[in-house]
Image (cartoon, rainbow, N blue to C red; front, side):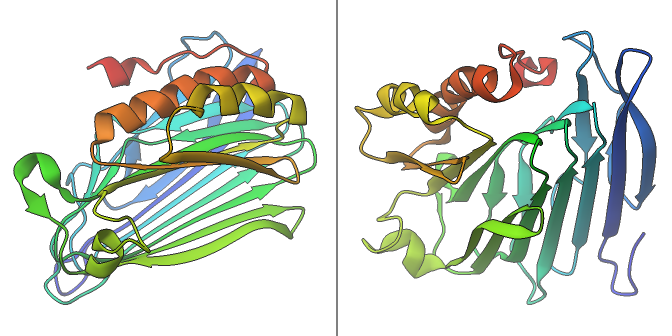
Length: 271
């Protein structure tokens, strides 16, 4: 739906539960231009779902809201077919809110393509994940400040990001940071590196940490830590492609520890 000023207000609500030996999308509700295709089952039982945003980008005044719930026994993987884009603002703030809930004995993987923040964009983006003691979760986010491949440097604008991870209502990780032009340029920020990425995985065992650390040992722009069973990996860089490759290889290592499965690359990534 659109507002009086012509901006988009879009909502998507998804719920997954086991049905007939595999995970089914048992509830789907949307308003405005946020949709999903039917689930795919390249792994047999895990539902691979592609989130679609037909406008292709988010402008000032737009608001996107995504909620996904995994019920006990469900395992869903959510991704997107293309990068998300936040366009230069006309003075209004764009908002994106993602809320994920994973029940006991359920698994959810949140693996979207990167978010591109145009120079001059104004946005507030939040991700909240609610976990239970026997939840399983892997998620990542990639952000490009500006469009280096097109010669666009992120000099002005405001990108506010909020990350909230809760276990039975208790905070595991709470983060707020604001990425403006100075943050992108200065040594106390990204020091001119326009790309940043984060991966989260729960529950992750201490014995698996060595394998992840060995994978990234030679890269000084990557780091990983373990916080009360929550694996947190971060990276920055000058180009998205090598950063994404490294995180995909990390997913290859992490997924068997968390999900008990080898990686199965979503087909949409190859198109």
